[in-house]
Amino acid sequence: MSLKVYFDFLSPPSRALLMFLKANRIPFEPKEVKLAKGEHFNKDYANIHPFQKVPAIIDDQFQLIESVAILRYLCRERNVPEHWYPKDVKGQAKVDEYLEWQHTNTRMCGMLFMLKWVYPSTTGKAPNAKEVAHWEKLMNEALDKMEYIWLKDKPYLTGDRISIADLLGVTELEQTRIVGYNPYSNRAALTAWLERIKGDTNPYFGEVHGKLHHFVDKYKGVPPARTDA
Amino acid sequence: MSLKVYFDFLSPPSRALLMFLKANRIPFEPKEVKLAKGEHFNKDYANIHPFQKVPAIIDDQFQLIESVAILRYLCRERNVPEHWYPKDVKGQAKVDEYLEWQHTNTRMCGMLFMLKWVYPSTTGKAPNAKEVAHWEKLMNEALDKMEYIWLKDKPYLTGDRISIADLLGVTELEQTRIVGYNPYSNRAALTAWLERIKGDTNPYFGEVHGKLHHFVDKYKGVPPARTDA
Image 1 (cartoon, helix red, strand yellow):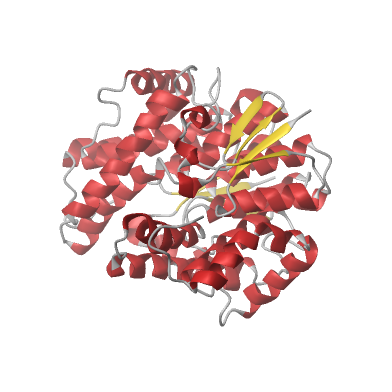
Image 2 (cartoon, chains in turn yellow, green):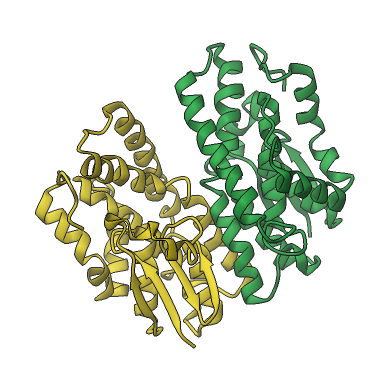
């Protein structure tokens, strides 16, 4: 059965999916869709993802969008260790709880990337300072909830072992580094959690973040006039 | 086993959960948390929902937040017809696809309610017109996607039968009526879908929307200076 995976390295949920596939040695055919080059707006791609975003998969003939739905599907469809997404009804519900929460919370990390990187590098205009401050405030609140509530009494976001929730969480946070932000500063629980994830997914964390980290080092948080991504 | 359900009738996901429970004759102990009276900020409620929102459940001793996680959990834990959430891996993934999509799309309906109703009725200040226009634009885009993509070639959002996706979708859309908006205007597919949902869930659609519809009739889209909800 052939699995085609459509992704971009600068999309957090794409990286979460790639880490999951690599860590579980699931064979797939990589299909990079370069967002910076507008490849997601190609007419052909609209047949794969009606909203022209990434990631998306085609598993044999079965098409699926939405990263969380894709990760859940692969946990059920492929033979992967149960810690990624428990089969037990209550354990699964606790992972679901975070997966549903994150959409309107750590997603703020992505908003900052859009506002402070994508927008200036494509239009040449500076982002609106008031708008940036608004989203930064929401992002700080989301990170505090991760630090003080989700990681309050357990080593991973949803339990004692790494799950797909941690992959989505960590890739979202790492995205903020490109705009010169450090989501781990003064957050001891998040810092220890990051090291755990890196240890559990080594060498794939570094591998899927290669392009992002290259940009972090090269641009020091200041986007180029037009991105060369 | 006792199931306690914490909800407010003016919360769309609370209404989706109530419709599901009633349509499936699942016994529960209703625990109304009046948001307009700030009951979600009570110290005791923070032990039930750490982010002080609704809905939440306690099933025997098992606590769970996030409406989508709760609905999935109940579909697995209780004996309900499979159309609500298929057991088949691919069918389930197609329902998941919508459930994940809706968070950052039809949620705009809720933002308009917050901006045009909750904010003016609690502060006495008029909402920012530019901000309202921004969220209305996003909401119209989300509704168009429901009309032209999700309902393009099927009678329900995720297949041939009603699922938990439809319950979350319909309660979110109905919320906009309180601010004088008609999400069904010039949208034939959404209009026909609404009638199907009402037929399938009768009399529970009307029952859980009683308070909202009373407000729609009473205030004609203009929020009171202080809500008496």
